Image (cartoon, rainbow, N blue to C red; front, side):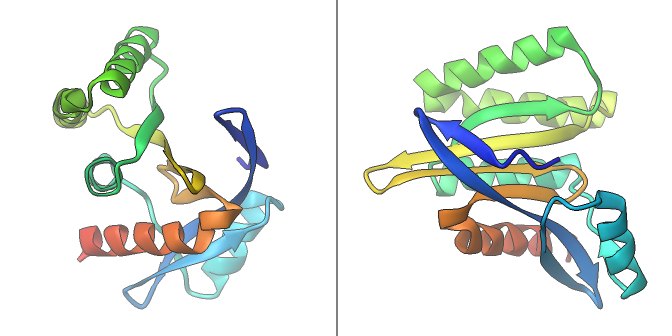
Length: 169
C-alpha cells in the first residue's frame, strides 16, 4: 500500500500515508505507518471508528476540486476492474488534458458515465502540482487510504478531509 517515495519531475519525494475513518459523524484522518494494514484497521475499529470508503462520486468531486480549484495535474486514474482498453482510453485522455486543460470536462463525463452505467468504480487517483515553490504529490484510494508528500501532508490532509466531510453530509 505504501510506496515510500514518489518521483515528480525527477525529484524524489517522501510520502506519508493516512487513512480516513469516521467516528461520531466526524471524519478522522489517521496516520498509517505501513505496519500490518489489517491490524491497523482492526485496532481503530475496536475503538469505535468506521472505515470511510471513497465512492466514485466522492473521487470525482475530489478530482474536480483539485483540478479546477487548486490547478493540480492528473498523474493517473485506476479502476476496480482490470480493463486494458479502458485504462488506455483514460491514459490518452489524461495526456490530452495535460496539453489542454479544457478537455477535463470529457474526463469527468466519462467517469460519471462509467460509474452510473457500468458501475465501474475509481480505485485510485494520483495527482501532482508543480509551481515555483516545488512539487506536491498525492494519491487517494477507494479504501480511504491516501499518500501525500511529507512537505504538504497537513495542508492536503485537511483539504481532503473537508471535501469528503462535505460529501458525506
